[in-house]
Length: 94
Length: 487
Image (cartoon, rainbow over all chains, first blue to last red; front, side, top):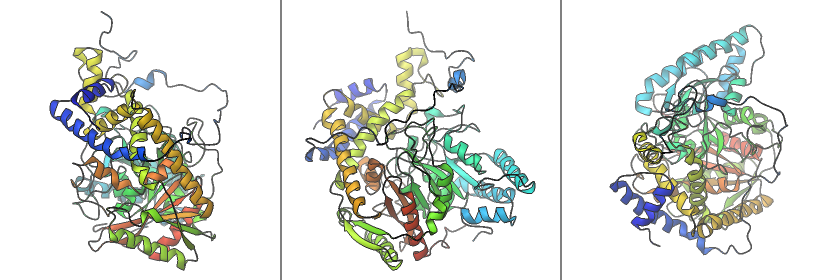
């Protein structure tokens, strides 16, 4: 089991996180420690065992097919970029 | 000892009889919060004006003979990762600083409908990720029994507030032990309902297959009253269960045959204090004396629960927390550098270290090349863990286990070692993975005066059994009169 600086760089990129050098090193060391710890699950034989995907066995209940009020613009009123009409984001198309 | 009713049921009864008013009880709680919050930091937000208004409305309902709810006029608190419209919900994170939800969570709506008075929002580990409340971005909560110790976590603020008589009951959320462990550390009762028993709509998602909202109160019956108000299906949460809601308060007092299982694998658990095992033996003895049968049962995969959890829960967290991107909620950073910079700097600067650690771990176990070895395998092990519980409950009605391997640990004792912190949930995590229910009850104190709890575990939708068993334990040990100094 190894966790390299490159591993951390890749994960930070995937997770959209920017951290300083000290935190980068700490994350590398912590991740190695935690992955070594969770490695215990590789000891058990899981051949033929179905993964637990759904917590409930009752199936998927359907709600009644009726229109309800939706939040609309109120859903993003807490955004720092909310203008009252839209959510402002940095330019994405040159 | 403070004047007035001590338990939630006593408070509700006193209000019902007109022996006190909600304005008086709510005022007392708000005053205790004002006096204690600098040292305890149980609350992130106190809603004095809204609470006084709700209390006066409750008193008016009674005076005018209007219909009253089962919790009418009772002051309660809500963990700050459960949204409400009264003020900001931070989830203990800078990334939601100042963010106010446009709607009430279903559980908040249900509390209000039952007449409860919400006094404020309680402190927590950021997004519920932690076992000590030290990972709150707004400063940790201290333990009312010993200010040098943590109250447990992640719902440490709710547990401490109830113990310190700042409210009669509180809501927490429990993903791997976050209601039960702080309840044990603070000497109060705390219940994690079965998965689906209580709506998660409006509870800030950490790990959606594990999260449940659960109540705290000073005694088991208080939890039962709160659960009765919270339980039931919700059209806004497709995972909420349609199983019938029982009369939980009545169940506390209903005699029923109880066959209790103690778990073989937990008897020699590494790092478990003798005090904790002695507390469990005391509860076992109490249940025997009350007529219960006690047998040994086995949970063969118990040792894999914590590793399985830290794969499953972090995978779900990395996905759930992707929504905090600096665009949709709260503050933002790095906007001047473009959209990618906005994402990376907002998340990098405003998430705390434990949250980033878990997002990274979750990203790792879901990434190409590691998915099968970690995430998929963990889900298979989770099936095995659930089968263990199914088999145990084919033989017994409830399980009796410790809640945590130690009493409340010191502030700073485990913050440098994440794995050590994770292991403080070794007895509670399996219950969450299996989706069954667990109740933490105070049964003893250490020589240093710290509370020690036990956990009663029931099958899915078996809350009535654990509430009955918990009541028997609570009555047998008779410790409700013992309270933290200054309350």
